[in-house]
Image (tube, rainbow, N blue to C red; front, top):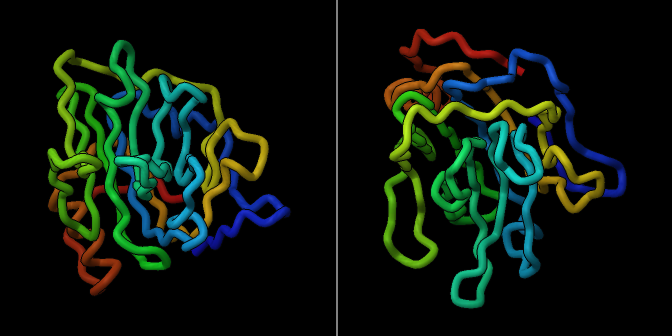
Length: 212
């Protein structure tokens, strides 16, 4: 597991710009995480990279990151995921899940398929459903203009920080474990298998991941 507390010594891991992670058609990212209470409860505007290969504008690449959104004047913590595609506003292609508690482990996964335009996200092996309430979860999105390939980017793949911030403001505070990246969009059953294997030692999926 990786523990990030964003102290003055830089605590993140740069994978680099290897072409293996130039995923332009389909992608799945899966990992365990906890969020440190100091970040989870922050009242300042926060955006922190987790598994990030997005450019500054989030118009190219793909990634998962922490962000706290202001809902009716109060900030709430979310884990977000998106891919950079052309002609679609970020709000219309960003998954988000409100993190229930600090210092608590959750398994998170998201998938994207550029042919169908489908984004899906999962927590603890279960697909996240959409909510129409203010600040509600956005667990599934289907783009209307397809195909919608992921725009390529030359930024590094970075774990524990966003790709473009050179200061501590972009560093994640918490723990990450069992990070896996696939160049396919795994099925709901495969995501559930990964979660169950991690918890119970049982798995049925035959997909081959790219492990970090």
